[in-house]
Image (cartoon, rainbow, N blue to C red; front, side, top):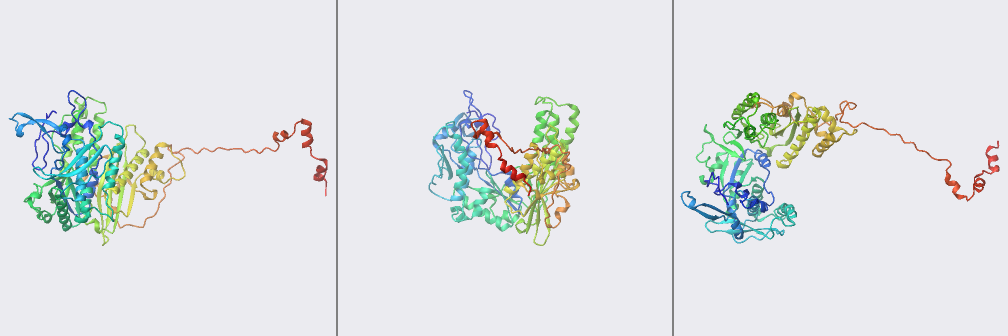
Length: 609
């Protein structure tokens, strides 16, 4: 295997292979097939990055932790190590000769490594067996995972993979569909039979590792310092039973950091005075977390990229914003990108100079992102003490983009109302230039989907969910019960009703709709001066009794989205004398005689009384 393009040999805390992750996807010269092409990747067991960040913002005391050299804690079965041979300099010295190596552990870039490591980490926190061999948990024919203990130089947990069939054989698709179900079923605790790890170290340690980790990084927030210290200590002890080290602790509270040895703390935190002026920052799954102020901030790249299609795309995508905190800013960059590259120019060809000034204005405005400080927590008080919580979602659309913004409203015991920004989203409007009502309806779909995602991921009981839009046409569509729509509107109304009820939708004027900023874009310097992060003022009023408002269709006789009502008239005829009565007679005279009315009956009918 080739090992060209090496930029980093070994890290100080997270040991990496002397190869890049893409090494396993490079085909050998004699065949177009790479190693990852013939390996099962296994189920995707990672938590949603967005979900981990949403839960990380819930409480006041935040903590971060890391599993030391997580992938290297798990061995590859000895029979399969020959597939991980590579050439490198002896003793990692580039002045020495090149020799052949063979990896013994799971490595970065190898397809099965994330599934194997994540599965074994969760099993370790549940089963807590310090010695011996753990039993085989499940066997689906093609793949069997077995965990055992290994300690040649330093004891570490091992994942052994036994493949009973080669990739590409029949039945492979069925196994891939069954893997997540098998893992989910076997790793599920019940109240009657908790796992050994939950019994010995507490169910919250299992929940921490399983729900608040993204690969090897754990992020969680708790109401108090004592709870944070206790959880970290118990989780660290539980994982240590399986020779997994939880370290690189980071917290916004000094007492939490002082409870652990400096070797267990992240390098940036050692000998740190949180009350000082020079506060450090810590990357939290792509977000820059300023520890002392407990805020998220951003740092735009200062590298000057060429004014080409490739350079513009690189600059726009350099802003990592999973929570949509900068949606009004990034949507402007994406709009410029689409406008500048609409002519499908070559990737490295210079773009038209008449648009260069607009691009430079937006790119230079990104330096103002350094002035933004967005609170990590939704509210200043603990959400665990709130007596009433609501999720409020706002949607809006323009000819440029559609946008949505979500806010959490919490009422404390003393009646104080706090509002926090949860997340935002923005999407460019289609190039087909649909009507404004259609765009507003698409924004409503975006808001409904975002609300469903928040409810699934935040792990917080919500007493109510409200939706707001400034389009009465859309409100009429959602509340409609009498008319039929054409396919475009019908499908989107049905999607909205899957995640919400018509009674949850309310009207808000455009001036008070914060989603208007996402649909029309804003420069970074003005973002903090708007209601984007704070929400409208009426959200801070105490919750009132809900009144159901029904919105009627706006001018249904002129709305082209409504199917016309077609009325059809049917005439029902009842025959008095049919030809069937003649079938009882064999001859015509016989029929006449049989149908002739007796003269005596006629005289009775017409005779006077």
